[in-house]
Length: 369
Image 1 (cartoon, one colour):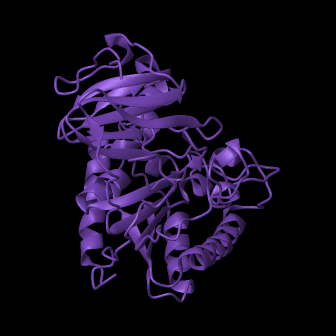
Image 2 (cartoon, rainbow, N blue to C red; image 1 turned 90 degrees about the horizontal axis):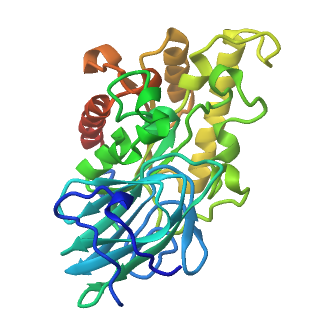
């Protein structure tokens, strides 16, 4: 992938990250076990803990919030992308992130003194994005590979976890670019919590998916569990090969909203909500065993749920108790107590809501031993 010249219209940049033409050339703390190396196959000089398909000169990915980091020695830095679908957050040094919208196939050049970070804002379950690494301009260099953080958290969930429509200030966001242009996984409660705790993280989330039933009974015969093990969600059936260095100390699960937010319809496999709840509990316990098989007995697992209805609350509480696992715990995001406004697209959490949830979740994680 060669460097292509770009115009300022290709990237809306803050003052400290100005586009330029292409140049010529484990302890008591449950989150503190050392990892020692990057958690995924990495491009030269690039740190990413996300699920990526390693293609040698580039990587592909679909899960929201996948991020890439590099340490540089001041000057021009190129971001090599091939993605006409997704939006990205680009962070240079300590400046506020700026948005790169559906960049296509090109190299984006920015000015960076010390650090550069690229994060996937949007969801694309069927269409992988592709990143070819960071490249240094004349007089600059990519300096080693940033060390993996000692803390690691895996977030598993649906649209709440993915940051669906969180940048909107109105529930009908169709006049302002729709869900994709208003979504930012890098400002989701998971990403915010991880940064508050200086943790690496994965956001393995898919909007509309439930533990056993998708939103409004859609796409029957599949659910979140169908895709959880995959590298590229619906784009490929290949199973993600977990690197030995990806060992999260905490797993935060947020599934169940889609199972119970709409009534069971005639023709679905469940006779009523009680039958659905029984299936949900059984499946959830099986999913917990699957996580224990992958990660062992040590990670804390939080079964989170917002205020929705008594069925979801009771089901999550019963699953936590029935697990018989002292390191599994239910955790309620109380909409009223937190003051959530749900002003994101389609009644989803707003950016303000995500900050409030992150504050509550961060405070809770700090209490765990």
